[in-house]
Length: 520
Image (cartoon, rainbow, N blue to C red):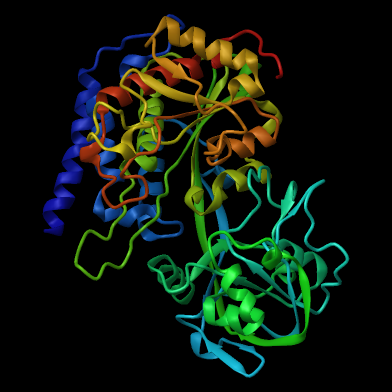
């Protein structure tokens, strides 16, 4: 079985090479070799990237590393220059992999002791202590707004907050525009945080407990001393802390009085978390197609996609436990590969360089893009634009008639976010190129920072925008298979994907050939 599937994956790669050789080199008016991007090519690469052998491409994982090696090997074969660390295609990111020892992890409230499991779980941060409890409602402090910590001395205390109950319309960045209970604990020398979690005992809760026990990797934090133990607790713990008020607090719409911050002077908690840690490594993959102009080749237009997904799950019924992420974001991953191949085989070069970056860890919290913008291997002040591709493989017509597919973009349409707000010039450029090539409907439906879906800040482009780089983000919408094991290659609309990929590639090429570009 394994040998048969491996042969099938290898055969798909041979098809990609053959289909490219047979493809006509159609060019956009600006010279972009868009004919080098074909449905067969995209399908063949996606069959590899979204195969079960990649094990869902979790960050970190063996499957993700194999995918990174696959991408880098192709880029090297095509003659693209390495853009990572020390002359390689990889930008290494050190992770701190930690796991909880349940036997050594306890939480005591008064005379009640709770073990790791159904009623209490803890993040894998070692620590112990005893302190007075402080209840802070939703625990969110908003810049120039709500402050449940006003007048409280948190040093040496244990903060109690309700999980997932942020104020309506909360926007911005954690640590800049608002602060969580964990953020406040770190700032104020509090001992620990206990989140009262309505999901206690649910499937989601059990998966998180399993993740903490098996190991949870996060980007290495040089300021490890800033970490504090964090607990998630259910109704029995809430009752031990808040008494009768716990019933209101743990409902979906807690009463205002129940949410008021207060020091629980007669209540103390004692805790211990035992955690083990080791270092793991993951990577971004970066390749450069050098420009032709002696001066402008030192400037870049970047295009990115995240090549990770959410890995594997344990299923008790024997159902598919591998989340292959064909659309999310296998579609963006292989679109970048198709662009890189088309550029390298075209025999022409634009004036500026094109940098291709495959980000890791997007699904864990935009790890790869955050790391790159904090530790760039390409000077950020030389990056003229960044075009991000995340989930462009689906269309409404190519998907089942299901209410959960209602917000997919129709065939011949794609959602575009970002350029109008950050760089009107980039917005105009992309729309002009689109009119000259694929004539898609560039739908601005989600191009609004106040949109409740918050798509503009949910993918890797946001870190580039925060660094002052003009960005555009393309995606086809959320669907019934989003973050499900059913996000498979068989669901992809490759005709739609080819059109969108060609338009984006022509836009990238236009940025790379223009004489001048103005700052937003």
